[in-house]
Image 1 (cartoon, rainbow, N blue to C red):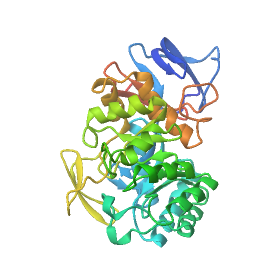
Image 2: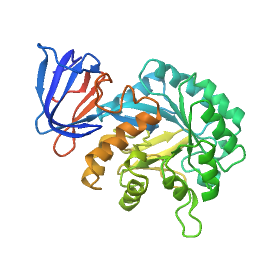
Image 3: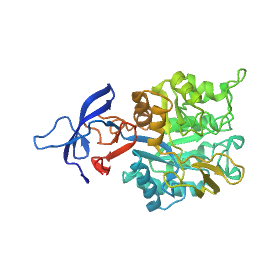
Image 4: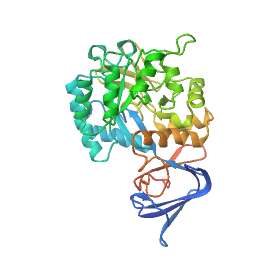
Length: 383
């Protein structure tokens, strides 16, 4: 079975709905949408022994399949998007890295076109408005303080496709930039920051609602200086991104975030770069050279972790089988929460009638066996 599913009943699987898990459930697909009822002539596909979960939503992703969202052509970007779709990510926001403002504006314009075409879900600017002492895989001489006028320039360049900007909000202009983003309906994310606990609370009060890859590229928890992590975890207004690849986070820190913030405030992301779904080798993340060895990406100069090679199916499986998180909680963090943050929950993020037929079929070991996007099989469960 391949191509567009005009009217199909997917039956027999454990289906994860917003209300819980339905054993022996079914999902009815009519055209590109989930239908409320089946036609008499609908085809039936028996998926007994499998899971059906909503398509994954990745709100922080720099590339994959050997292609970079930060520097590639439109065709290369689409190639990277297809790689992630094959791993279950049916909705993806393309992330940039630090560069010159004019260069980033040009990149935003290209990504905006792909957003308008429905291929990606928007643009995330990670840098250049970040703290040099927490720069990670960003070129230091291109970093700058978050001037609201320059932030506005990038938003305008994205022609309505800007979804999120990561900022070190303690820098001069940081709080004003957060307010500007909030006024324009763009997510202000605290990240690559050396902020104190008190400064982070100020940023949240100003309108920041996301923690960019919590724990990474920010001060750690200390008993007299709790720093940004404590402020971000404790505030109900904030959703925390987590990279669950076994490299970026110790399992205890993942558990801490889920326990303290709750599954409703976690977004599992990849922070993927070109090598995701492609393999070891030498790559570039923006202007910086990256070596990927044994699936771990590090800067050639300095050795800092440089994004990840993660795909969200791996994050899903690890969360359930290694971290022993409930399937419903993982679905919430990998699909519903990011969809809500991006303002897309009316269309994607859960298996409900009227929404796009974006779904992933997993076997009993939580490996991907099928991926459907807008009613079309990207990966057929029949092989």
